[in-house]
Image (cartoon, rainbow, N blue to C red):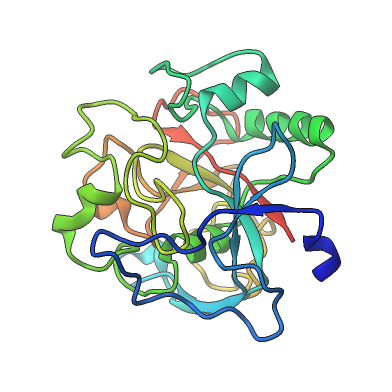
Length: 267
């Protein structure tokens, strides 16, 4: 592990304070894990996205709010990397040479992208950078979004604070916004709630019965061809932005200007 981390350009402050200047729920790094601060920023190359080190650990995935978020179950994950922000239109254009987004802007999240289209983007990005980027699994996404706590949102249960962290129906003005303009969660990740829905690697299942417990993507015994999205978007109310909330789309569905993504990578 130490050798693998030696290739990284690690920078950044690690955990970023919330609006009170503290992060009381900061998770602990696994014993024996390399001395890289959880939340530290990793950049593999000049054109590569900024990634955040997520510590290994266990969490309770799901909730009792919706049938498709049940049963609540324990998942144990290895440390991994996930992008600090949603993929921007500038990042997409550098790789794909086009911009499918409805609401145009260099630092706005790319949207109107299908799961299949994202796989093409990832393939081209990996060829260009010689890395192995991918979509996060659904479990990785929820673990990263929760950032060590079990509340409705990554900052707690106080809905009045949601506007500090997310662009959603109450404050978005009916459009996406530049990434990284709201407060990050305790892992230093921006826009995990709102702005655009985020595709994951998993295919859709109606519930979590027989779901993997190791953090891997659930891509067997799929219910049709739909894939899972997480996080809600600029056009949805607060309940849809909960850390455990799930949505689905077809593989080739790209008509939604609500949908974007962020990248992940193994360590």
